[in-house]
Length: 377
Ligand code: F6R
Ligand code: MG
Ligand code: MG
Image 1 (cartoon, rainbow, N blue to C red):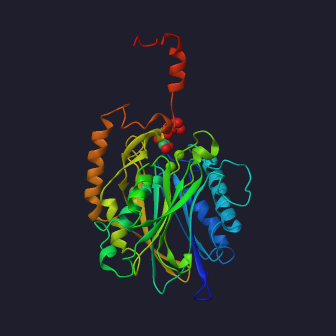
Image 2 (cartoon, rainbow, N blue to C red):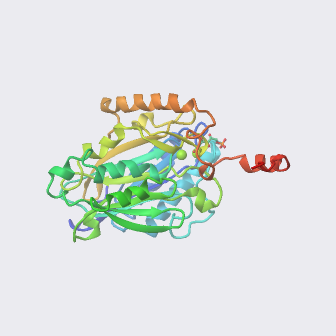
Image 3 (cartoon, rainbow, N blue to C red):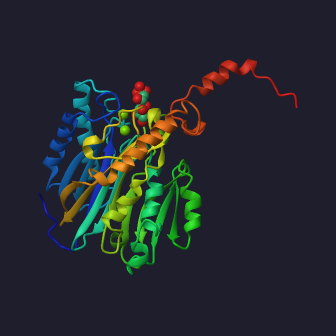
């Protein structure tokens, strides 16, 4: 493993993800694809990256990489692109489902953004001890993180540190993206909490991109959380797969404790995604082992991997939802799945017309065009 030589040098954690083929269907990644990615990343240690860990959630491969090159670095993005291309070759060879589906372009052009893969990247000044959690989801969308990130960084009912820890008591800033109009705004909590909630409750449009601790320090010291907010379907102009998101959260010593960061996931909140990317369903926290959506292609899943950074090296992971403390959340998620599934093709299980990723509605309306009559009133 390569190691950053100067202690105060900034380290970047880049989590870049893509679905380049499922096994079977859209349920999981074949181990040979993970191996192909590991081979590519291993060859880049010391050249481009310091360390890496390859995982998957459902049919998405998640490349967790550390380096000293900053966010949006061409070499790091190219490396991820090459790993996904190698994995695609294996997926094609095995005739896996949807081989190469998230690689929307034939050629790499400087940055994976806009080419299909999703990315969450965090440049940070590594503290004397730097605990981080990487979250990876399948069968849902980036704004699935809105509710938990709000609870973690703004809700004293969740995070005792907001009340008790003097270094968190001033609160946090939330960078919110309008993923449709491609705009952003920064809102401060607690003072602008109601404005923040007015936006992020609208999950089809607004997604929390970053959270910062308030203060005058460099952003690399204040950064607390980052998510991937790419909307694949908006990029491609048509439905080409769900934008299954990832996030990185810093913990402890002035940031929420590991247990405060995990606490919101005891409530399996409803998120958009699931079957055909067109249904609301509970987000079930699971171990890496259990991160393969089955029932009705779900329910949507999330894994949480804990690491300690050691001069850029990834010490870990610890599989944080592989714990009986989350059994109850999984039970609730199954109960909610039973309940909401009984709605069949009706809202609110089914998403609204604009959010549906598969629809026959235009065809049905066209077919019935001549049979629609004006109401008498
Ligand atoms: C949702 C998802 C799956 C597929 C479904 C149909 O994000 O990936 O639920 O939408 O399995 O897939 P196709 O149309 O490929 O047969
Ligand atoms: Mg897929
Ligand atoms: Mg997926």
